[in-house]
Image (tube, rainbow, N blue to C red; front, side, top):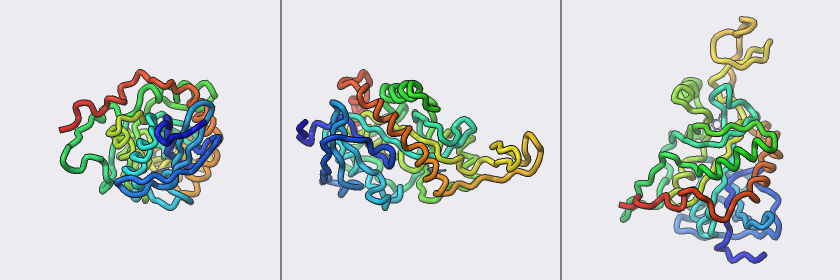
Length: 287
Ligand code: ADE
């Protein structure tokens, strides 16, 4: 299979677990008007599909979420011809339903970041793009149905609260985000999603819940996770939970095989022509 650097269909921006087993792999360096992407981009084939993979946090995870050059990453994907971005990510759960190990097909976000470059239209033309339904409904559907088929604990639809990080939230913030209707919390979906929209690309984010952030407490006797002051079962004292990076990495590693399996099962099902409107996202948005 030849690559002409313009005909890669699927782009994956993620970390461990998303680096699926590609054939005929080569690393390419892409130059963009916005500077360097997070890393060299791996291009290769998976079955009859050409795929590009980029480590969002760079080699050896050196880039914190607020320092990622999101514009360069998305530009580079567009440069390779990518039409559909898969964006696997690790998140905290903000509800009992979005428990550790659950996969969530994200369908909404609330942006709580600041200072990030969030548009390619910085002057001259202005782009007021709709973000009412930011994620590709067709690819989301494929991820959900495939997840169910391969036996994953997967939820269709969830609101992602995107915080700036790199710190985790306070308990008050975490509870507020849950009251706002947030299902999961992470640090990277924004502005990746809107920049992909400005490039008329499909974007689908598959979130793996690695922790319960810090809204919840756990009963050391019953092992139940709950919201409150005492155990709802034994009425004993409960311990407020605290998220740590060790916990995030440990759960992430436990879910690597499932994430890889999910992505590998979805890729062959992506038709060359989707029925979604993502390639028209920018129609009428330029002022
Ligand atoms: N990524 C994984 N867990 C997280 C959490 N609790 N808050 C923000 N980002 C996360």
